[in-house]
Image (tube, rainbow, N blue to C red; front, side, top):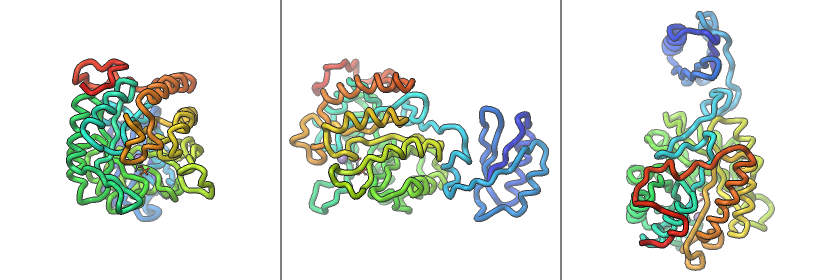
Length: 359
Ligand code: PEP
Ligand code: MN
């Protein structure tokens, strides 16, 4: 339920409504809007029987039932876009955020090389898995803490905040120590104990859509995180399984504007896992920005033929730089800037384009 205050409601009137909500045993969430404040109510299991008491309080304009099953995630609950700040990078604001890096941290040299290259090309965040969920138990599963340390070094070198996957609640404290943003992978989107656990840590979360998850499933998964007190969630469309197996997955771009209508949370797109093919990453990335995505997460490798995982979908640094030039034009066409690398704390000296080799 949402209590919408009158445009000129005073701070005292807003507080009186909050106090009444608390007295009913529920939790008030005052949300100042462009014209008026709305107060969300959580903690109730069904309709609030004593709602009439709220309606009669001074300054209250109307009560609205939030009909969506996902409450805090819904646009009904919060009208304004949420901006999630990761390090110095705002995701979900006016600017479009490009995240890039290897599928997995293979070595110090590979990770630092790729980090410098994507930073020089204009990426503002670094991706890379230290813990990898793999379909086969016999595949490479990541360097673990050693991989996290390499990511921390890459952050120190480039100034880029790091997003990396957390696979289970046991390793969450360790991953949260190193990561600027916690990634929940497609395979874990409905791991509800993990969702609750990341909801209790003070780190932004990148929640990827499961292969077989509907948009509603994704939004309800995000609700688990918000319900535990962490409002900093970014959603990621990364392709779903359909009858068509021509590509690795089917990129559901319609989900992007739909989610932006249903929810205030930022939405980014992963064109790499969606297509599974480097030659299709650039067109799908362009399409994602045109569809209204708040950013992209792209896999880049300095030597894809030798990549330990996902080499076929990884761009080489030169192709990534080409992609960035094209994205600048798409961003201009949709009248949004690309979030610029100048926002990052300047560390590790100047990184100019072309300066992609590890010193
Ligand atoms: C990844 O981003 O490295 C990854 C494993 O993606 P997904 O969970 O979407 O398959
Ligand atoms: Mn990958």
